[in-house]
Image (cartoon, rainbow, N blue to C red):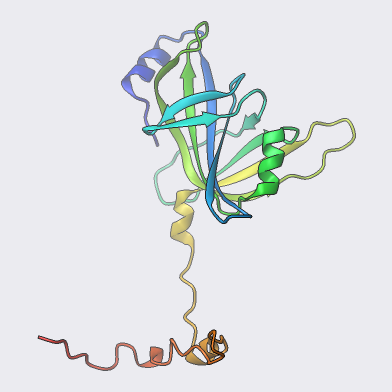
Length: 202
């Protein structure tokens, strides 16, 4: 569980008429260039520039982020899955859908506390979850309904549950041809690895 900083604790204990916002930061691969690029979306009424984790980030608001499920924190290495919904009518989201490959894209979400009248930020943004995109449901809405894009985020513990890939044999690796046409023999000694003594130079 990510705790509140002292300023946020004081603010919440006073029970003022404040506002709680959600900010989601996604790092996805550009399909055209292969480069990793970022996109920030939050529940604020307008676009905002926020300093989070020592980095100045721009988050798009004005209805971009619609809803998010509650998170339950428990000890252990169990994978947490979090559902967050974005507006499918958002031009920024539609452009991102066409431009980026979001499969397993890293995601980090923060909770933002703001004062009701001045909208000034209170304390340090609190991290809610860090993980990667597991699934995206961007289905078409029914007639007369709003288009909602649902994203499922799996917590970073998911990386601990991914098994190591099986080793390829020399025969399998040889099916891959090198630029000159010769078979790739990278694994020709794989079967003997660890069985032969190695004489180190002195």
